[in-house]
Length: 356
Ligand code: 5AD
Image 1 (cartoon, rainbow, N blue to C red):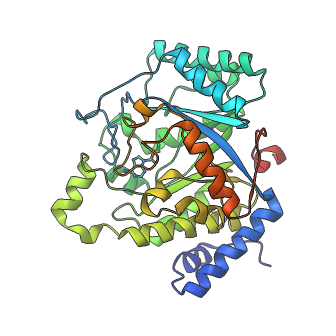
Image 2 (cartoon, rainbow, N blue to C red):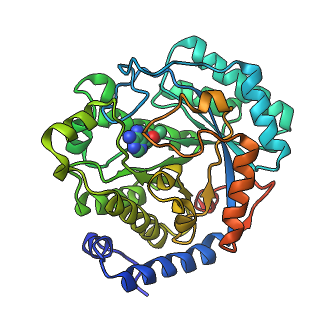
């Protein structure tokens, strides 16, 4: 078996169009997944603790300029309650996510939460955080408090395309995003990144470059999903104005997302790869299909019912009317339906990271 994959090989795989070939690709990715990271599916309970955001990304529903969103910030007690629920339910880890904020109150608030969760769970719960771009010292502070993993998507590794989907100002620089990923790695986090698939203007070559970017930057965890329309955003309004041809159809975006997961598994082997919620927005069985095509992580939403409705990055977010307990039941059924095991009570660290 070939060890080095060239960009040409990756493009070839991304462009596979025969159902039989695609099926083989997914089966091979599943085999590699079992060989390198086992059959288990790890859970990261997702707590979306605030939708207040300083950023104005042109595709995102909680962008600063979207006045239709009711903003919220959870109380400390609520975040702790949800984190402890995950712990008691044997989720091995949680992910704390919010819009991007940089003020000192927010930084201290997050630090206190991380310390408190670790204290209450005796460090037995993996803590992943996803709080955007920050100064290196702040990443270090949160790491010292006990967060061990960080999610920060590059969105696209094509700098020009990145510029097209972000406002042209210094608060939205591709180079800053990249620098942040490198700070995180220097500090010792398990680093998660990813891209959106099917952004208007994105090509298969861009996607192949994204995969090579993950390899080059030695990323430990991957979270990728389809781009999904959000009606109150400038990107969607542009799509409407120019006409739909600039947007690939849902089936293409969904299928390409599965192919990206499968090829990422084949290329990177021992990383953790999430079956993201956005997949389920395009296909009711989206996450199961991803778990059979190389993904090994699920992020059940545990944000309380009222606030999960207000955290809509894109339209038709699934699970917004469910409770955390219902999400647990539902996902358990889904995972067992495809004969995978759930790594209850395990942190599920990235094997790739542990080997470093
Ligand atoms: N469609 C799909 N994913 C989106 N995200 C934000 N907006 C959208 C959208 N419209 C993703 C981005 C971000 C993550 C938190 O959510 O990739 O990094």
